[in-house]
Image (cartoon, rainbow, N blue to C red):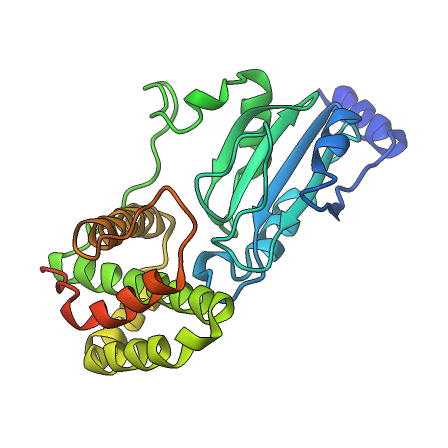
Length: 274
């Protein structure tokens, strides 16, 4: 055993080391990059401060892949300025949300690791698992088989009030993204929308302050998984509100009139039940 350990150490000392480095690649250049490399892990994210889960995701990804030593695997990052304005992905599958890390083999997506990575991430092990058990894109977001460990659950489940406050914070961020888009795309609509959004925040100030405390105290991986599910559900609820209550079609680009409808409609936006 001692000899084996010594030989292992000797071989490790002369083996070529390859510390992973993350390369920034534009969405336009990504297909060509994937085509010329065997295995590529891509982080999709955004520097947009309105993407709360994107903040610091780049550094977490850099840290997670730093120990990688396989030179055949390339690690890259693709980002765009406004988090919800996805660029043209062509034939490549789009991420479900940001941030997301997708694994490709010879130009084809074979698996994904969604969400922001944690400090104690087993990310490289998960990438290796994807390489060993590739999936079709249609199966990426289906529940894992029982043999695979389920995402961690909170040690203490979120209370009904914590769930309400988490949804409220998600609603604030989602509405902020809509206001930012409308203000940029339709400057004439900006003052009205910003005033309506400011008034909505003022009305919910106390609850939003409480929500910020929940975000800080509920910071485990299990808490993040539970919060992510609530955020996705709140996004669907807001979409249903814009379609059902405001009559905004989802099969076309937003118009200035749509932005005006949302600005005026904020006063009648149903409250989140506890």
